[in-house]
Length: 219
Image (cartoon, one colour):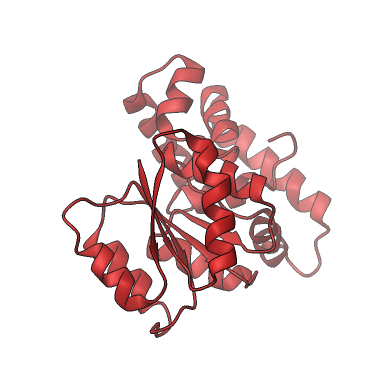
């Protein structure tokens, strides 16, 4: 398995390589120190299994290098590494198609867990982004506990127990295959439940469903 690391800070690159080597003896690394090297890596015949990309690196213009990477290698999951912890930025990047966002201040163990989650088909969302989204969603006059209770009552009325089980596993970052295995159902059935959950929560995707689920007591 080959992992592409696009970052111009050598110490960070070496630290990432050292930790991700724990994924297995077959793990190999390709490094791009600037956007030109990243473009050359994108054009290679054999794509990487995963790309970890710095948000700001030499030659970058906003998020253009991320857009290019996602468009050119649609089957390759992309995780952004960044010194920023701005929830608005994280939400924009997730909506753009990245599968994870890891602040550089986070520990190497968190990074390894996030990479494993993404490689298994999940999406890694930093906890502080979820909390910020919850806080922003609260009415000015409502207390968090009241909002959580209201949301829980709504879900108990709209969702079946099985759909709540799916939502619990989704909130833990588990991909459809793992949810199906844990619940003893098919992946097709998981997708049907997810569609019903999205409609009930009035959300468009897994990330928004996870944000909503964090407001439910016990999930």
